[in-house]
Amino acid sequence: MNQTLRRVLILVENLPSPFDRRVWQEATTLAANGYAVSIICPTGKGYEARYEEIEGIHLYRYRLPLEAEGAKGYLVEYSVALFHTLWLALKVRRKHGVDIIHACNPPDLFFVIGGLFKAIFGTKFLFDHHDINPELYEAKFGKRNFYWKLLVWLERMTFRTADVSIATNESYRKIAIERGGMNPANVFVVRSGPMLERLKIVPPVPSWKKGRAFLVGYVGVMGKQEGIDLLLQAVDFIVRDLGRHDIQFCLIGGGTSLEEMIDLSRTLGVDEYVTFTGRVSDQQLLEVLNTADICVNPDVANPMNDQSTMNKIMEYMALGKPIVQFELTEGRFSAQESSLYATQNDPKDMGRKIVELLDDPDRRRTMGAFGRRRVENELEWKYEIPKLLKAYKALE
Image (tube, rainbow, N blue to C red):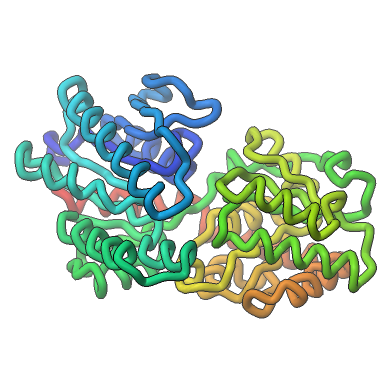
């Protein structure tokens, strides 16, 4: 390996490290393979320290003034993040050195820093494509206005600046090549495979069922495109129309829509059947998911979610849990026979599929075992490590 390309700076804005699992897996993998790694990210609950070193990785964090909701809010948030990230990037370069900038989106603004470092210091720029932001914007706001056009332009500039990009699936790779104009030889698929040493199968904790016979689990962000409102409508259908009072739902995760979804559960009159935990520790997450009889992914069927690989799906599979989700291209690719697929955005059909699966224990066992084997044999993070290192090799 070229000795001048060992010092890596990872930029991430939407989650703190090491909470962001993909970023942390990438960082620790690089460190284990001879790279010196630093990360710049925001602070978050439990990750308030402005600087710390974990497993030999230097973590520099900054505080964001708000968690944005509207388009103008995102503009403020991302502008502040860009300012802090640039200042800290210069600090990291001075203290540790930077040969490669590994930028994770959202937002698609780090090409500004990558481009500056390329022009001034000869730094290589690798783009880690986590979200398709034009589709994400349209999913959140239902518009193709000035901001949507701006996001398309920022995405294009990011790909043009990148020496190499990595995609989480083939759908994202296609976007990098066709919309981003990247050379196919410089686009690598590195999926967000789970690490089985973290996702351990442990004994269930019956108290999470709140005295009911069954538990349905969910883990993820509480945002508009995650379809929590559709899941709550499915709960309402299960309770009111199907007359089932023996099913508890536990929803793990925080986000801008959390309070709104709690209010909706009360409005629908199903709040006694739904537990909202907010963000929880890994121990509590494992307790809930191991206790769950099935897990759900109610992501809204739209271009964003159809082309995105959801980490929650593979986490469910890693724990041997059968799944119910809406019909989505990448969701089906990941889960295959470990999931039932409801009609897109139809909460009643999701409700029927949930009840159908809960009432068939043999099918649940078969589906759960299939998902676990698929992770063990194909999707676990260890299978992605050579692909990540190959992308880095292409920077030489």
